[in-house]
Image 1 (cartoon, rainbow, N blue to C red):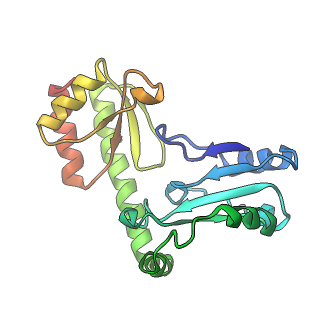
Image 2 (image 1 turned 90 degrees about the vertical axis):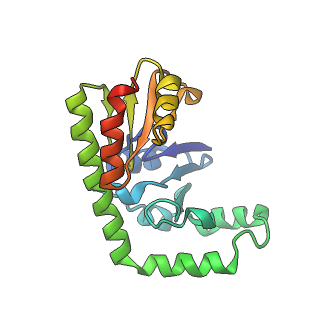
Length: 203
C-alpha cells in the first residue's frame, strides 16, 4: 500500500489532479493507493477520481467531515473505492463504528452547499489576510490552499509558549521532522489579526 496525503498535513502542499491520475495509472494492480483527501474541499482544483474507481483501479479515497463541513466532534468520514476493495475493508470494519446521529448529520452536511461555500470563502479570506501579514513580517512561510500555513521561527517551542501566554494557540511541527517550523491555522478575521499583532513579540 502507498499512502498519499494531498493536500498534505502538516505541510499545506498538494499534488495536482494530473499528478494523482498519473500515479494511479502507473501503480501496479497488486498495490493499493490510499489517498487521504481530508483537505481537498479547500483546493481550487479538486481531483475527481470516480472514473478511476469505476475502472477498478487499486485506489481508495478517504474523505472527512471534520474540516470544511465543521463536524470534527462527530468523527465521521467515508471512503471511496472499487467494490472489491470496499468488500475487503468491510471484513475488518468495527460494527457500529459511526453513530446514527453522526450519519444523519453527515448526510445533511452533504446537502448544505451554502455552508460549505461560506466556509471556503471565509478560509480563503483568512489565508490572504495571514499571508499578507506574514510577508510584511518577512518570515519564511510555506503557503498553500488548506486552512493553515507553516512558518519558520528560530525557536518553535518558545514561540508557541509565548503566543499561548497571550491566548493564541499555534503548534510546533518538530515531532513531524520539520524543525524550526510552527503550524498556524487561520480563524476569524479578528483571531487572525490578533495572531499577526502578537507574533512579532514572540519570535
